[in-house]
Image 1 (cartoon, helix red, strand yellow):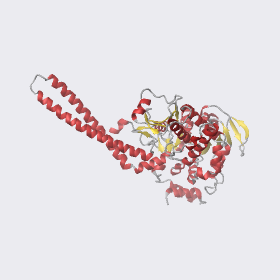
Image 2 (cartoon, rainbow, N blue to C red; image 1 turned 30 degrees about the vertical axis):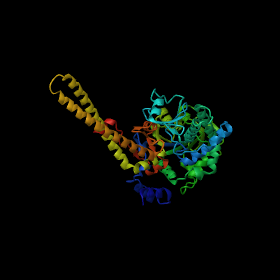
Image 3 (cartoon, rainbow, N blue to C red; image 1 turned 90 degrees about the horizontal axis):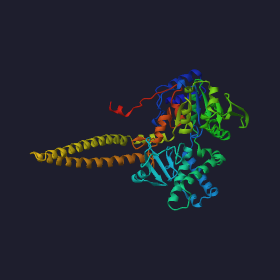
Image 4 (spheres, rainbow, N blue to C red; image 1 turned 120 degrees about the horizontal axis):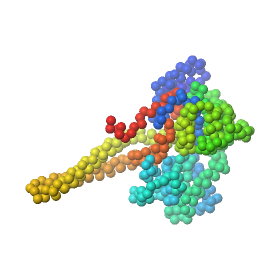
Length: 509
């Protein structure tokens, strides 16, 4: 029996306290999660110092079936564009491409482009509609002047809820490029954004999800186990979501009620529930809380919530009056790099954990490509050595040419010429080998990248650099992992240590 199985038994079964204690102690000893279910650490965090943990709901606790969810929103929004925004019926023939839409991308709404940048704001990949731009085209658009991502021209793709918009924007840009009469790209983006927003706002999308939850939302008992384990030691758990009460209640009832023996109601998992929180404004503004009854009707307005209640709206400041602790004793777990992680980090000292669902699949692929990745590192090192040798021989040749001119009237001029000729031959050979090696490295890089995602490669890297998204994860998330249930592999007082935070010069030691 595995250590996690022992832990599950201790939490699930009606055992004597002494037996439960023994099983828990065994479960917490020498247990390692699978590589693709690990929690990764950017900033050291001692869980024993954390007294309160807040959770987002959508794409955090509610780990939707991504393709089914995105395709549903894509199809409903296309219908809305055609029937309410006056777009031609031909757009209804548009095809959803699940591999194309990734978070961490950026839209250029002036040019109709979808871009991927590295942390230095260098555009490494770009598509106009569905057409991939080569290096020359990409450079002419994005290397002639600085890029200002905060300008109105560019839109970041921060959350999985935005993936249908990426697909729609690209599909409509492709149809416009091929001659279909459509508005300018900026209008296409705004209409697409409004269509998707209206689906969320009027409940159209949510009603379809609630009507067929098994299709859109997996039910994972390990998630409840993770929450039970995190709550050990009288730690309090909070649910802080932008979703309305009726939707929150529907999802959580499906996710938690009855998945574990004795867990009759999801409300038993959370010491406080805050719905319609309005993040990121929840972290920035001073807004009162509205206490709700069990049917979701407003009872009263308060500045500070009370334990055990259901509230709508509110703000971090009012919540901290209840928690009455330093911000570093609060951990917030969410999926939105801006609305959950950056906003809470910039406005408080709360600790942060980012849920990146794509991480699990990427780690699985990378493990299968271990040999190729090691070969790639060797090739990169050899390319550096080749380049250095070519540079050295170039300089020697230049020096010999200068000396041959100075010694033009003296004996021995022939020796200079012979040395120069040999160097030219050596340089030509090295350059040919270097070119062949670069092509081989490029092919290997493309194979690795395509295996992860055929359009964009790694979510966290662009070439040999971190992607813009990868750098944001590095900068703002204390912890990151692929799903909340991964915390079930760790003790409630686990010490998440930074094992290495190397700078480039340390690689020579």
